[in-house]
Image (cartoon, rainbow, N blue to C red; front, side):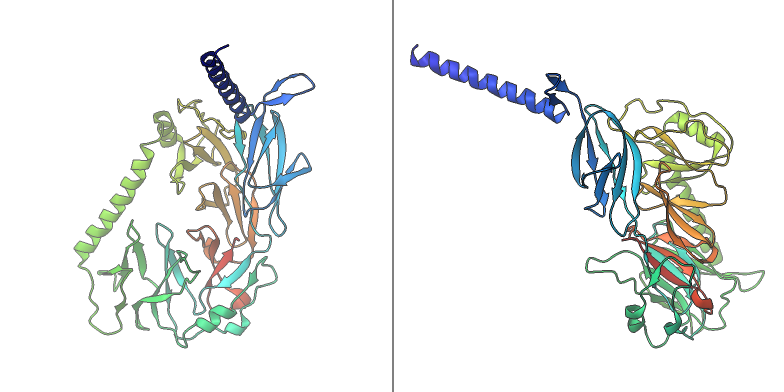
Length: 430
């Protein structure tokens, strides 16, 4: 055999080897494994076990398998999966592993005993959070500070307080007025230091004053009813500071203020309608006719709603089906008064809650919901209704609970040890 033929044979053999290796790698990536007993290729699926925080244990059908942030090759079947980490709640769910499909856990573990930390010590009256959840305003109506040495958790709370560092940073005197806290975390640490947005006098009508945020969370209109016949409107930029302690009080003209309020309301309606119009047409018809209290998740891919009456949700509202979609049980026959979440990405509808006495809202992860039983307990559940976890049990005011934008903390308004007026506290979820 001459040199040219040898070279051609080697080239051909090399090409065949590349093709074979490519085929083998392809079927390996797709989840096929060699079954020596049956002398065949066995189809498998993959479990991508992730958790927050990382480094949790992964248990499959009661047996410790590995740690999170790993992929596990499994035979197609139904598996009971538990993800555990000391000091945190256990995440568990039944997941169906299908051949050639990657299933994910995306487990979020919450601390068993979260820390409770005071954000204010002067009382926080009528706090109101901005539409984007990044800012909070509240009124301080007295110059007197509360006794800081006596701020300890009541016996029926499940959280601990850490107030020493905050106490040391407090000013010696507080000022009456409207205060603002930025709830966004800074790169170098959590500050959340309050500042006076508007200085007010002691004779200001705090009892009847109201606050209206702009849709972009940049401005506020403070409405003060001077009498039954007239009102004062103050347009405030949250990036500035104002002093209303010396007359005259400069306010917006009523006609202009009412026009601004109407524009804000219209903008909120348009913002919601733009999201609603993206939903499948048949889903829009069902929600318009049979649902109430609609709200979109922060990532705008899911919609929470309460059924007004029994109805049927059609199958395959989305023509393109997602590979690796949730295998959890659906509820496409919603019942009156119950709460549901529809996932627009996966065309899945899940029952979340049947209890009418619980207030429900989205958590910043877009995968969780806040469940608030007024003045008694706070829970977090996944959007498909699973892994319902009690975060806090204890007193809090008027069901006032809001997550920080990062999702690492909750904000509550409560009065511990029968203090004079309620204060703002954060509950750590890390």
